[in-house]
Image (cartoon, rainbow, N blue to C red; front, top):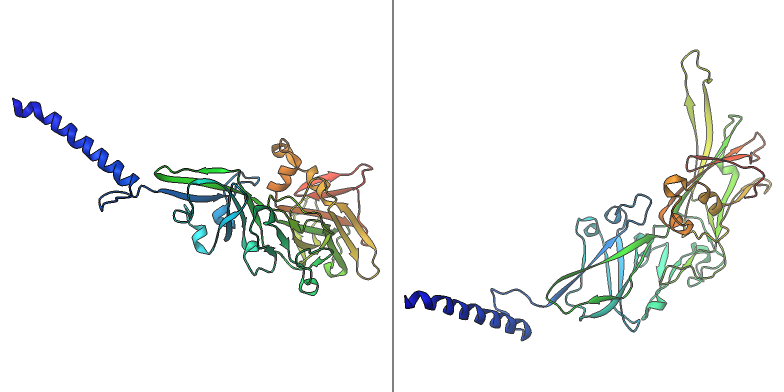
Length: 353
């Protein structure tokens, strides 16, 4: 009976001793082969769901990250740069186990092909502090002398997409275990397609027109706000002419015919609700203005019922694809009574745009 009565006491002593040994091993860094690492582990993930689908598209869209870790004094203490197929894998994360001490940090990122060093679209300026982490759209080669400002320049090429992320100050604890943090991203670039169609059905040659978008949005601060600068003139980087034939059965009320149009495509930087982003088309032969409209006002007209609760700026930041269809008469003049925007028909009633 004495043997049985002493077993619980011995077991309790063994368990207590093991607990003390385990605690001592963590606090004094005595790690044995059969024990885990007691140091905290830090992981950083990225999420891009700031879009109209409210779905995470990071793995499908982002192919380069530049992650900056900023301490409580605003100093950049670590920068992690990575690109390639790894970003498209499920569960991609940046491991910061061996580079950060426990403390409070902010995370800032410029992501996307456009943020890659040496890119032909954007440059992220070298910095030692958070406030100096600025990003600038590079001008075309002919006007690249003023890289830092990009003021008053022309952009005639497609630009790679750019994403921005910034967190509030986060606590990186000293506790054992894996601690995960997420950087939410916002897309800073937009695709714009402008379609010209003649109501007469005659062919439209896009090479007869100069398409431009003018906006002062080439310089972004560390927090993604725009830095005041002279306007940049974006030119359509692709112009395609085409037509569609429509055949109807005999007896149809709609006649068989073809519809001719030209499509001009742009890529531009971030849109702001309080800016007059001017979308224009001019004839090349005589310089005649075909149309000049405030693109932001037009874009906000067609938020739709599902997106109407969104604040205007949030809608502009979530939307990244705009389509405008203008109709011309036989003399290439804009019939300014209506326009299609992202498949919505907008009818103007004595409203200036």
